[in-house]
Length: 266
Image (cartoon, rainbow, N blue to C red):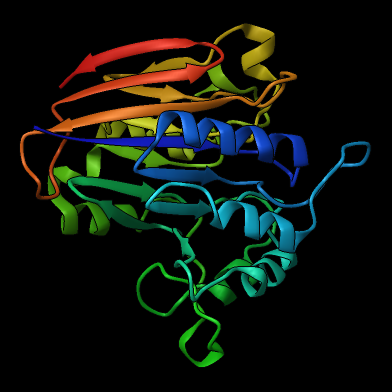
């Protein structure tokens, strides 16, 4: 049996202390993949923050084979500078935007962020694939529809394997956010296609206020670790597969730090 472990985190905002805590968490959990679920950039006032070049260097040095990025509403023009700071010769910069990335048998589907302008993000995306390039002639992507109309074709391409893990910056369920921060469009997509696990971010405080990091839409488990505590909040999901080929996970163990654990079987 093959297992794949994914550590997911969002809303770091170039916070130097949380970047250090993230490195410690990745060193401890040894995930196969670290997923950045939006708003990694754009420092906030009153918090000691790393520069874009330092942020890129620290993230690129994380001891995980795969790193994947999603856009949050704060990844705008700063993403273009971050892209230039990234050590492309040492490891690829993988960005998902209505696309999927395979980590062994695990297929990760990355949703676009519907907040703010995604013009800079799309400008940096490669015309094909997920690896960000510095060549402007090989880069640039059209805007996706604000609906989930792009999703059925992606799921047709990957089959059942595309239903193990979905990442989206905006929570798809109100229980992990509030009326203004959750995304009902993504919620309807989850209800229709029934992924095993959805990990989101964006609403940093709702999980703290409601003491709730886990909810469900039908049979789909939805997680938002938040980022409103003094210590770093993040999730670690371990998926088990019967094959080394892309497929739907048979079991899943989800831990959200510092919150708790949930185990499910497919």
